[in-house]
Length: 416
Image 1: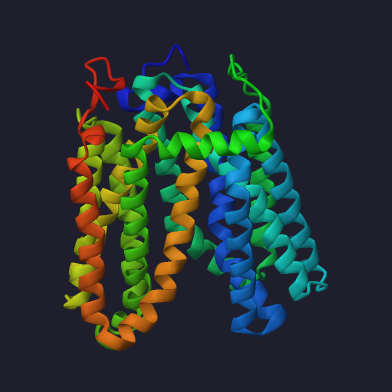
Image 2 (image 1 turned 120 degrees about the vertical axis):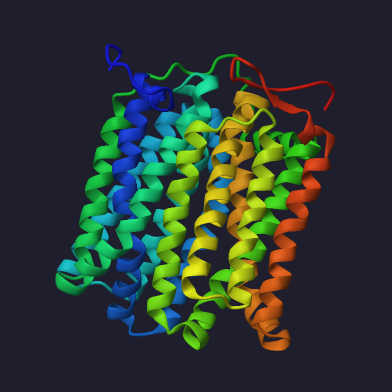
């Protein structure tokens, strides 16, 4: 690879550790994209109840919420590559177990609840470790492009994965989606095992609770970071309104499930567009431009509130999701260059935690609010909640002082 000249946008792939990480995680993402549809139909086949599916999903979410801060601490205490490796091994074994239970027709609801909880708990260790490991595999000035490449592989699989899983469920049953996912975890495990990432040095080891408190303090004292987390949490909370009200609008005004399927597919296309833009566009003021790009997602809520024709809503979704993905890649390439490397996994675990908690809260609130004030008003209010914090955040001095140097590194300009 070192002897092959690649376009500058693909240059992170010339670095061996990143290339291994990208290939392993890209293949693993294929399996991950198959599971949601398969898990839903497996649960309904076993338990024949919507409440059973709700129990499985709720248990999974609670397990992830509990494990994220724990995983963040251990990803800063241990080599992140090993934390990810252990998580992948556990999750691969879990998916293989589910596959065997479904293939042998011995699965019960408690099996699916337990395995989903274990899978999500292990995933809570993987997410902060993965976010913190990527900057160790690529030069800082190439980090945004590296994150964009990782995001593109995930987006592409989430465009086609659910459809493939639907075909598998309809033809051979949900078990084979779990078989494939287990196999992709094996590939990811192999890619992580052969990486040679230098360990972080100079880290002071403390007890677990002290490390956890230090991580919380590191977030709390960085006002610019904490306020960004708050703005993004408000975005997640408000975006839930689109996911709840969108299908209702499609049913009542756009012709039904087919229209919502096209709209959902357009969101995947928008994610790919945003990733492609992030490969090329390197803003000098990354947090300002990224947060302003995030406001574009309000377009899809407003278009749905009218409602506009399906094709217009789809166009708004492409633009909005492109803005969201662009912010994501900027955010995860900026934060590792501004926070101490030995605190990075803990800080990002709180980021993931806030995101995971805020959207279910939005789901819980949207239904009653929409019943009381109407779908249109709910969507317009949600768009307002999404936009205002993202605009106000660019006025924070710490955010305005973040800039990209001519060499491509991200630093603070002046006092924070």
